[in-house]
Image (cartoon, rainbow, N blue to C red; front, side, top):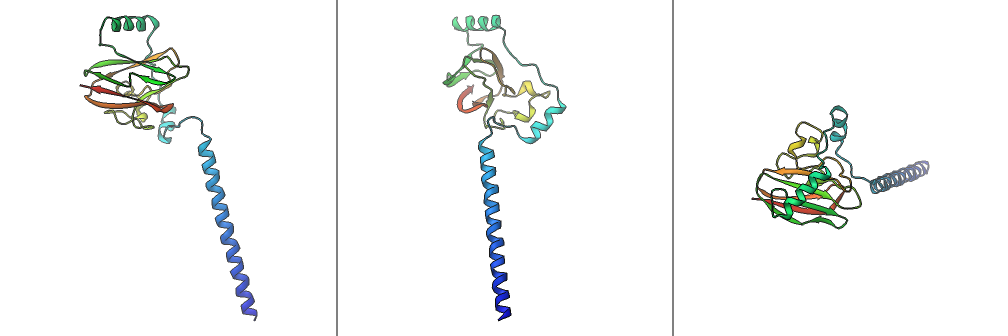
Length: 184
């Protein structure tokens, strides 16, 4: 009789510990999901965040108003040397741009918020040859199809496309806005 009661007590204790364990694990999972959903801004990979402390930031490649006006004037004359992709609150325009290798493409922010043009795939930016978000703010940052930082409304950034192919890109701050550049 004593052994029976001891076995029942041990069985109940094991069940209580097991139930407690599963409840605790479920709360940890729920906490993780809630914390993941509360992140407001996309985060760079951990190794990228840590590397930023050791590197000097590059100077942004912004166009002055006079340079932008000159480019727009050239475009209005039919000059395709510096095509402009405009970013608005609706996304990129044109959605698809076909250019020749070696062409400089200007990304102009005419939206009400910052944007960050970069090659796919979000968030690593590794589709365009040699590109990688981890190369931002390094000696190679001028060679990657990645603005590496937000572009303010009214400002612009440009990139020279030297590799032939079909290159999809997106706004790193709003990855649902996408476009394609075809380099012939």
